[in-house]
Length: 302
Image (cartoon, rainbow, N blue to C red; front, side, top):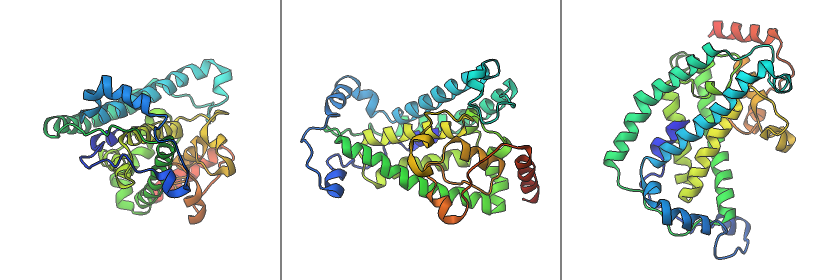
């Protein structure tokens, strides 16, 4: 989802004094946010970097490659490290160097052909981004990220469902991402350029629609990239977010792995409620080869 950086901090006035917590919860919060000292430090020493149109692109790319590097190192260690390999969803199917180079190749191609030219265009033609002097309150910051997450989850569910239900969209754009039955972190951006850019568009527009502070916008951008990498990582760790969020409300790697094996299920990127309501929710119980057989039959029918 690095394409989110292409649209980051759009040239619209940030409403830095919008206190979502006071509007929704009626809470009385301190006048100065606890985030203010950190924001003042950034403005004092890194204002030029923060105002650059390239900044959202840089943090998006950096966050993505940091996450996939960590998971790829784990993938390479797992076959000889049983205590790690037992957390893999498919411990008997290791990630190979061929897998790594293939997925990394398409990722690099998309960045060089689409992300880099668009980033250069922004750097040449867009003015520096205005930065508000005040940081958001902590509650506004957290609720802003939550609000953007809920909105993006709804948008992506519909977008994703449409690309599976419309055969032309699936064959033309989405089938690339489903070439891997058992995803690993680098599959996150094993995408067509259309998918990379369109998903990044929603990631960036949502904070603008909700009038978030730019600090909230950047944090949400990094959050979505981290979660996307985790969803595709192929591990089910005890500290994974889906184990921390109660009632099975969060998807996580097992459900997204099931989506790659049985693509008619688990379309939402974050939460599970839209899949529950639409009847597309599946709680994976095994990784048996019968699942792969059903998946291949589904692909042939498409």
